[in-house]
Length: 574
Image (cartoon, rainbow, N blue to C red):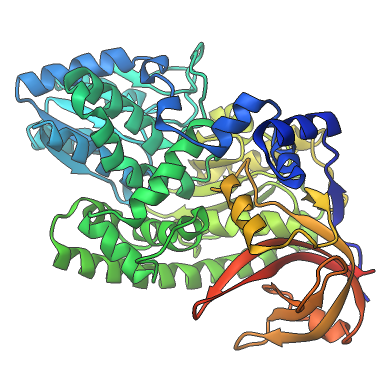
């Protein structure tokens, strides 16, 4: 009836460590088990995990060149120099730029902000430097970009402008000759935590500046920008551990009650106003709206939304972003379908890395499409779109398994124009004549690391349970592990021998699945269980069938009624 297409890997934490945490912190044993599964194995770490505190943020001066950045910004403030903030066109880039502009403005700076269009190219470019010069700036501050902009920074210096770089992308072999390069991935960086996004790095620099200039206002400053930091951190899919966990925990609460007109309008347009927020709300609703501006039109729309003080303008911009997000979803579906058809052609059957190119694929959505092709084909994927004006292919890469895209691109550097990013996600451009050489070189590099044999995906399971723990009270305790995301996934449980009741399709097109399910250890009424995009399960189940289910339990509130429901991850016969 069902094929065992997914391996269920149940974690086996050390029982003594689980007992120690449960006893020391008066936790339910299952909750202590979840902590140990996430690498939280001592009492002090567990307390910090369960009770995030701004006091536990690391000293910003642990990052390289923060002291140099603060000194130069202090001089610019004292001498009333014009500062030009240069961001990036994705959600992280616009939130980082908006954060810098708001922080500097609050300190009385003469500051102007700018985010480029995707068609302008990634990173600080010579054209961006020229724009700063035309604006009368003597100092450029980058946000979420600049670590690869060697020539642009040299050009800025030739024009008499200084540059401070705040970025989190991996540096190349040569750092730009900037006054300061604040990047946690620089060689010999001794920061305790490095996995910050662009908004996170910008926050650390502004936090250090405020602490130096107006220490009595440091806490209020932090609270005033944490909504933006949370947006950038979650939208950029950074690990939600250590400092990111603190920033997002506080940032979600700050976002829910934010007074910024743009954020109020954004929440209203996404039907998220007047409610507690989760990281998923950013991942699935708010982040895509901000990203849609840069993907489909002009990132300045998102930047203006995050910086405007006019509620009417904010409302109009939020509506525009919602429409662009809808357009982006449709375009990404088209590109994904076309790319998947090409990926399944016999010519690519033996390729370790899929390099797919077509001039009709919009640059703005190929990153989303690449991620979806990776899920289907279980190999690294690079999607490229052709630019006739420059005779270059430009695209996005997404990795699979342990293959490091950043190292691979360095190994192909002589074939490429520009590239940047991380081990799992990167952007790249190359001359059209080098496409076949690039495809073959990558394939050769990956031969020893990637197999074309089908890999059975694995679902990590926290524990096998009978379902007797699923009370609203326990799920409220379970929520203390949030915010969930990369490196801190939502807990997944397996219950065996559950009874399926009323299995049926749901949704307008019947593509989703719902059933009521009776768990063997749970008394009372059956629980509602749903799974998106698995409507065909209803055709293979009969009422009364016993099944093993993998799921995440959640609290559902509807019309004042609170209940427990299950979000199914997988299902198979008992």
